[in-house]
Image (cartoon, rainbow, N blue to C red; front, top):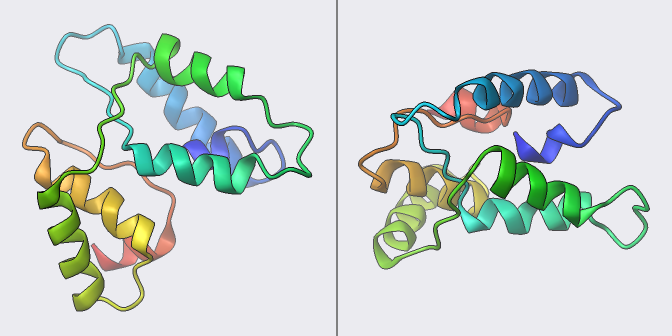
Amino acid sequence: MLLFYFNRRNDKGRIARETIKKILRNVDNADIHVRIPQVTLGELLIFYCKPTNDECDPSRMITLIKKKLQADYPSVNDNILVLAKELMTNDRSIKPYDSVLVAHALVDKSTKWLLTTDQTLISNF
């Protein structure tokens, strides 16, 4: 979702912004905790902040993630890595960073939703 939030050029960007706006309207609810795995932040930098992208503004990302979404960004642990490897073994179409993202959601007992626009993940899970 974050990968497309900053992209103003396509439908995925529009959908991502609409979804994140809905989250922002509910983020003050004590029952809602936004978690963005660190692998997602790395993926965001890889795809959005290429050296040739003059539009990349890390301060906008930090403002959205920390101040607006009030998000935690948990790191990978042993259980997540083991499950990520199992997911990749069972489904050759899943990319390594996507397997870590899914494993984060499955290992975290408080996770209720996994928001993604990734069609491979949507069609496989």
